[in-house]
Image (tube, rainbow, N blue to C red; front, side):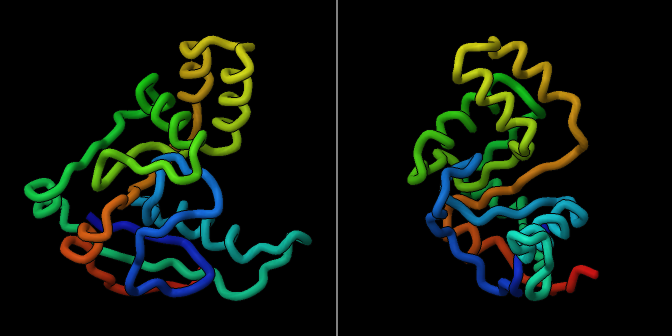
Length: 165
């Protein structure tokens, strides 16, 4: 599987590190199978508060050996926007140090629409079934979160980079 990571630098040797904010699938190295999505992430990373690009948006490209990973690690893939997916994201968003029970977690991205819906849900203004219906009408996206450094060491190969034009 080819995956992409958008940033303001080339990342040849990814690390599973704690973030300064709570993330959808907990602590991990985040990538996507959608190159366009990674390009957007890279541009966002390089955009300052005035909306200007500072630095060079970069997409690092990797090959993730899922066959080897399936045999040696715990992988979980969420099938779209489901109650299970939303509850997992909610639990991770409550704790900046959240650790996934999986070595690789794959699923949709919780974007701004998701944040607004989660806000309504946590305030008790909508039910979880209503939240799920609201979230199913987004453009296709995904995130591949490698939650275990050993997966990076044994299953991930850096194959190149591209500057976002």
